[in-house]
Length: 196
Length: 192
Image (cartoon, rainbow over all chains, first blue to last red; front, side, top):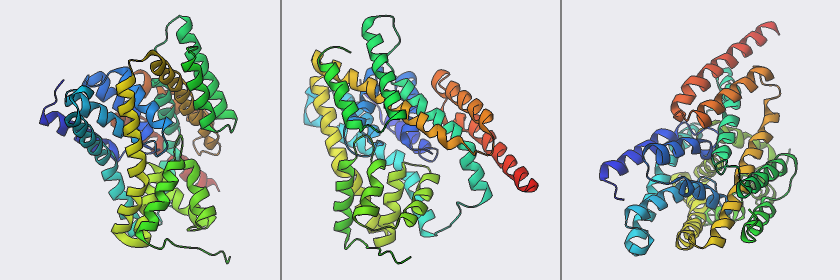
């Protein structure tokens, strides 16, 4: 697969345009990125997209790094795949950087502007109304992100055990304070044993 | 209140602190921010932290990234913001790309593939569980709980089922509900 300059430009513009509406964090914009990369442009497969989010959640650091992995995966693929060696890796790093810059640039600039001029605006009625009005949609977006990561629903034992594991981790995350590292290690173990 | 507030000694101090903070943040940095900036470093009082955090949350972009930029900029200007954000991103980004490269090299192995699949199931549940946790924040919402749940359902249908672009979803669901919340608040103030 090769991408033209206009493809790259289009991708960066897409991220730039998403940046200022990533209220509630970039993970809430994941469904839109899935729509763009997988459904619309066919640049990444469903498993590639899902593993980007999983890898970013497993590794320490801000969750927004899944965007870097999306870029990396795309860049390596456009550079001829992992077997193409350092040139493909360089493409991967460059694409990861471009994606991060696109998604964080505009919102970061806005943050600095607001911070510099020290506007204590968060008590204003309009801002409070905005936050209150957005709250349900934000929760819906978060939930949709998790929903998208679900394995395709099929009636066999393999998928049933995966869904069971997901359901268990929903409950643990929602109702308990178990550290995520325990939950992730438990999942890894089940996977290695071939139970899920 | 006579609580003592420290400040970072240098840009290097900012960089190192944010690097160490980011590397402790499994499943997101949000959980360790307060522990490090308020409890350990004492760069912020609990009250100051809440104020800055609420600004960081109001603005678009990842909350932790916003807070990092705000603090770096406050202490050392643009240079500080760059150092702090570099601290937050550089090491974890390198690490995560190494992860991704390793995974791409090994994803043909059945054991690795099934391990990541299982962890993916857990991550999916973690994100949905986190979303459900936020439900408690809807109590006291001026629009009232039934309207909130209706909006939530519509939002889910629009984004996850019908796959409508996020910008359009904001226009279709976010803007009307913002206006509705505003009306509810004005009306409540009028009564009070």
